[in-house]
Image (tube, rainbow, N blue to C red; front, top):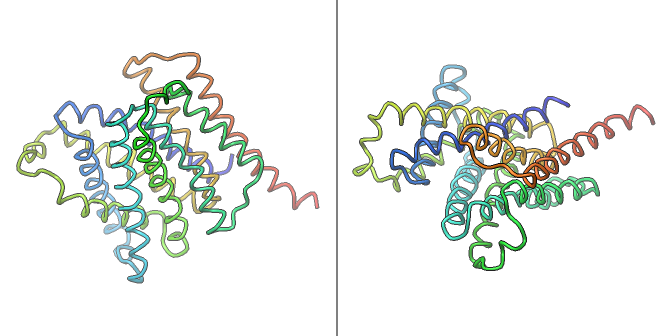
Length: 299
């Protein structure tokens, strides 16, 4: 498996650990959007400090018109998809919200066809299909669960998938000029600044002095956020956005494994089948890439 694919899968696997940090932060009375704000600010601080030490020249946007790309990744992707995801969970269920979030690869494939002229192959469509089915099985969503589901929750859930997809699209464009490190840094700086007015500082200021809150927040900001987005964006630079999005669906597999072994959540045979579907899609995309690389040599 090539380095780009490994980076994408590693980044998605780190995203799969988010639940562990979030659950611990919820125990201190934090709401979902407050956790997102903490996550954005700590990630922005870590990334900015690193770039400041490593290369101060990198801490600037070369052209003002490029700011719209980071507004895209920071607001229309990070903030928008988190808001839609949490709202979808609130008015439906976690399995439904998670499954709708992973419509993102379909959105990326459509956008990439028109924006980057990435081909829509039979293998890619098949991988998309088994990825979505696998995700539904992993999170425990079955067709019968949709009977009493409000249509508004489906639209909001699809909004989370659209927002999730936009990170890959805006980043792919930004990668023409900026490094993965710069893109991730500017993304979270803008997300953090945009979220700050909505954080209840008066009511929750005491959290800043809780060592455990700071520890879990720092871990959340470093591993499944700063590091995960850097290596995912690096992998995205080397491969098609649509393929990267399909590969990133390894995230719910990792999240399920953590849920089973860390939180002793139940695990069913249906979920195992779903994991096999998702992993099969990963191997299908990888095999397609290998065949493409071999073609020039056999010509």
